[in-house]
Length: 105
Image (tube, rainbow, N blue to C red; front, side):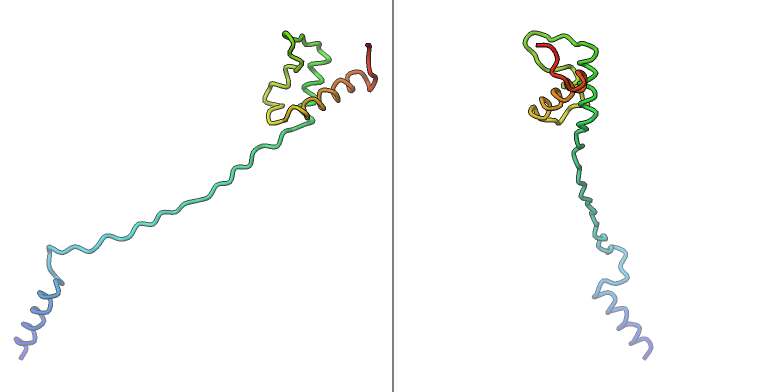
């Protein structure tokens, strides 16, 4: 009886493929993790830009051709600021330099 049970067990193992050296298990599934990164653009520093423009006016920068913009307006400290705001900051810097007076002419 033990021989019959043992033979039946071996037959079941052979039919199902269990215990065979040629059969390998399926590879494990891979998992990909993705992270969402949100980049916030830097906020322009209006005070620092105005101070830099004021320094240009107080040290006396020279215009090149018909260019009305002080050098600080093209530096990274004033990057990201639109033209109307730059013009306002230039006027404020002039007012600061002139102590609030309109100045000559």
